[in-house]
Length: 124
Image 1 (tube, rainbow, N blue to C red):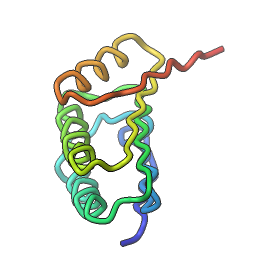
Image 2 (cartoon, one colour; image 1 turned 45 degrees about the vertical axis):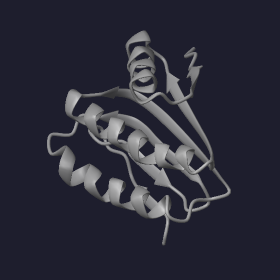
Image 3 (cartoon, helix red, strand yellow; image 1 turned 90 degrees about the vertical axis):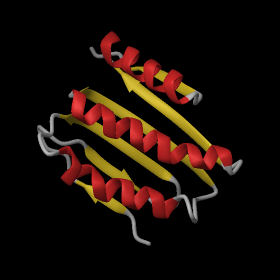
Image 4 (cartoon, rainbow, N blue to C red; image 1 turned 90 degrees about the horizontal axis):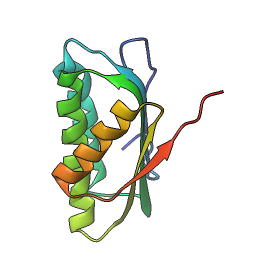
């Protein structure tokens, strides 16, 4: 299994998934056809959880995402919670610079009952 990297655009997030255990989504997600974009991401994650890294670190660093992307972000966390069930070492980090983004992450963590660390990004 190889790493997955998708360069971010103004409408799509940067995706940086490494077999070693680093899973990052960063930027904005304003995608119209979310299924086409996120299906390969979910497939990669489903393969990853069969043979995860020693420790998995999941970093979400969204400036903004639309409602249809929110469903897929939920699905990403849902897939990765299988590692929690397998007693694997996993850490979820949620970076934000706006209260709205923080609240979305808190809602996600509460809905899926996962421990999420929140990190405020201070902009100069």
